[in-house]
Amino acid sequence: MEGTSRIESALAAALEQGSAQPKCPPKLAEAMHYAVFPGGARVRPRLCLAVAEACGSDAGRLAVAAASALELLHCASLVHDDMPCFDDAAFRRGKASLHRAMGEPLALLTGDALIVLAFEIIADGAAGAERSLAPLLLTVSRAVGGPAGLVAGQAWECEPRVVLADYHRAKTAALFVAATEAGAIASGADPVEWRALGERLGEAYQVADDLRDAAGDCEELGKPVGRDAALGRPSAATELGIARALGRMEALVDDAIAAIPDCRGAESLEELIHHESRRLVPKDLARLVA
Amino acid sequence: MEGTSRIESALAAALEQGSAQPKCPPKLAEAMHYAVFPGGARVRPRLCLAVAEACGSDAGRLAVAAASALELLHCASLVHDDMPCFDDAAFRRGKASLHRAMGEPLALLTGDALIVLAFEIIADGAAGAERSLAPLLLTVSRAVGGPAGLVAGQAWECEPRVVLADYHRAKTAALFVAATEAGAIASGADPVEWRALGERLGEAYQVADDLRDAAGDCEELGKPVGRDAALGRPSAATELGIARALGRMEALVDDAIAAIPDCRGAESLEELIHHESRRLVPKDLARLVA
Image (tube, rainbow over all chains, first blue to last red; front, side, top):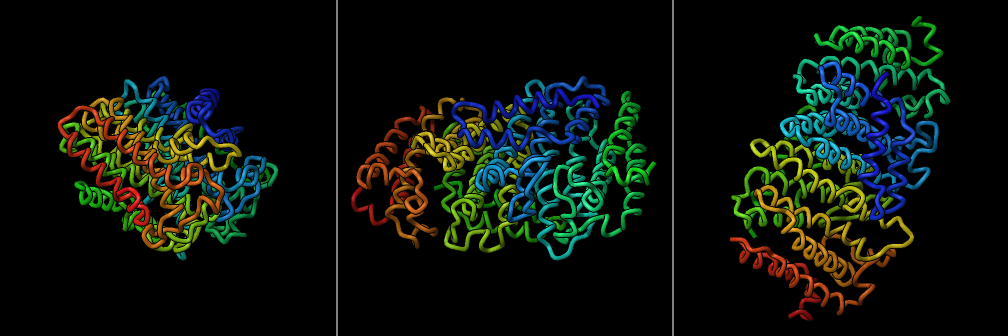
């Protein structure tokens, strides 16, 4: 998928701006870098850039800023989610989780600093595109905060009763919706048309994540498996069973593709989604899909 | 001081927008409210509004949004700072700290949600003032994040060597500088002229905070005292001794007043600063000042 190198450079530049200065406490700078590099698949920022390009933009400065911001927010949520008071995860992306590597205080602060940096780089990328800034910020902030963004999704884990669809919509789909909408806004297109694509992809990704947690391989994933069952968290794999969850995921990918609006880049976007959806299925289950 | 009721209403409206909706996980909504109400002295947002008014604005929508955002960011930092992995404070503003009242996971998420909400309400308040939005966001985000904002200030506590001035500048003064600069930006004035006032007030406030921690009364403060010494944190009271720290604070207040730029509201701003600085000194020390 295209866009990866641009995203990596933009993330590196953002961190340098935000932390790699003499003034920054050295451990905070190190921890922020540790939380962002090396990255995972960078799915959300790549989706954001792909939509911006499909809408006709050459993925200008604001699109790259929005894409990087979404990844920083995602990384922040992983750091906080891994902390002892939450999932207590010992590793992430194939290495020790941040709090295990550098301690809880720095993990807490690093998540906070990454959230703030995300908004800073959006503002910084808006020169010449001032009219897009407020809609873009509202899209991103609502995807991350309350009442129905990523943080709200995590907060559903503190409630005695949870509707699986609400939980997934907030915890995972919201950031995918932000990725498609932000890509559209940064290209001057109508974000409303791009909402459904983000929703379907986000749902598909969450089901895939549940499947990988239930049936995946720890080494393949770079993080512990079986956490949903161990923590009693809602999971499509537990609720539907592996086979039906797999079918659900495939149906959502088809729905996502059907939801791509008419645009010059529709075909390459469709190809990208197919490619990504194959990558998401744990290897042991891939035989069932083939 | 003026502005308080406007700030309280704006904060209530912001929380309602961000969390008091049926979609929001009820405990997260409750925790966000708990973290923001009842408030402390609301010093930073009142300063922001006072500067906006002194610059000639009638404290319009963007100034109120910026002021509220600064308070939400301050509240978020208190919640995270109180957590067991950091200060492990049992109470705050005269009641149980949030993690003691509602648990660590919700405290972690509430801080995150308040940070995000701060940026959301700034974006929301920018209608009709699009050109001020990016500078305002940059001012606020840099005051809170790395390399030299509030979070960086907290991160200095994780370093083996700290220069007291750098630490205080980041941990406390940064948000005061943001308050004066944001007030100016929201009124269309030049923020550079208002920087020195924020710096001096921030330093004065930090020295006062150290004094209150060292010599204040637990009941008067609504939070534990003697924490700096107990946690081995840098403190002006420890470094200079009570009497010299008190003198330092008074000199900073005088410097702050001298730094007020020429403007129609200079006189009332001066009055406000005198009033606030008297309030900041612990009652037991007030005799020494008089």
